[in-house]
Amino acid sequence: MTTKTPRIAHLGIAVRDLDAAVAFYRDVLGMPVGTREVVGDQGVEVAFIHAGEPEIELLRPTKADSPVGRFLEKRGEGLHHVCLQVADIRAELRRLEALGVPLVDREPRVGAGGHLVAFLHPKGARGVLIELEEKRSS
Image 1 (spheres, one colour):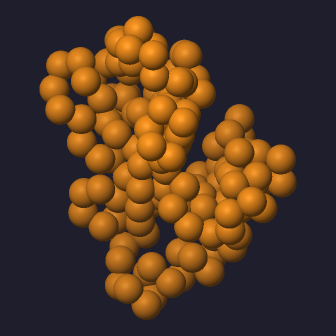
Image 2: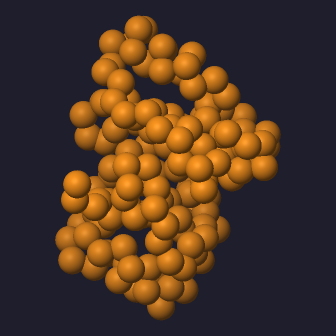
């Protein structure tokens, strides 16, 4: 990675029923629930579960044809992606592209919390969908 070792920011878990999933983590496992929001351009509603570091991001599709909707249809509920926090997402995307890593996104977009995000294709990451995230200051 570019300037420092990335850290795992969160683990994304695809769910069909966000309320039931939030209740499980909160009521059964005793984990506090953080922010909840709709990320319209990605077709998901998300809820963050505070699990220390990394967090857990629960993702429910708002449209059947969204990437998470297609994932649920094909694979069912479960681990969707691993998110790595990077210092400079644009520089990291250029570096990875130069190395021949297949990218889903060549340019970052705004994701949950207003942070910049981009995805690496699972073909280049041993079958794992990896999200890169650059935190924006509030």
